Image (cartoon, rainbow, N blue to C red; front, side):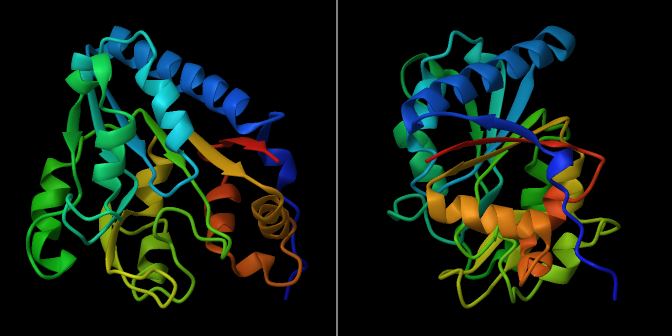
Length: 238
C-alpha cells in the first residue's frame, strides 16, 4: 500500500474572513466566468449545489449584472423530491437565486414525478446542458460532495473516470432520500470548478481528505480534488 499523498498544492485556496465576504467574491467570480462563456458562445450553463451553506452566495449571485436570459441553471445533484418539498434543491434555487433579473435564467431541474430516479434517468440526461461552464460544489461533514455519499449504491460507478453516464442515481444511509447526481467525469468536463465550504468542522474534514491521513483517503471529496484535469478553486471561511 502506498502512503497517503497530500494534494493541497493542487488546490487554489481562497480564504475569506466571513460568509458575506466569501459570498460576494464567489458570486463575482462565477458571474465573470458566465460572462466569458456568453461572449464566446452566446450562452452559458451553471450547475449549483443545494443545502444551507450556499444561500447567501446564491442571493449575491442573483444581484450580479449579467445577461441572465442567456444563462441555463441546473443542479450538481438533487434529492428525489418534488419542487414543492422543503428539501428540494430546485426550490432552493428558485427562492434564493432566480429572483429579480436572475429570474430570466432557465432552470433545468433534475427531478421528474416518477417513483425512482432510474425511471427518469434517460430523459434527464438528454435535457442536461451539453456544456456546463461553471459548477459550484459543496461538501458535507461526512466528506461527500455532489451526491457522492460514502457507501452509496452507485458510488463506485459515479467516481469511475471512465463512466459514460453524466448522471446517476444515489442511495446511501447518510443521504436521506434517493438522489440523482452528476458523475465525476461530468464534473471534470466543467472548465471551472469551485468548492464552497464554511466552518471549522468542514475545514477539518477537507484537510483530512487532502492529506489522506486516517480515513481521508476514502472520503469522496478527495476523488474530486486529487485529479489534475480540473483544478478546484476552494473558497472557505470560518
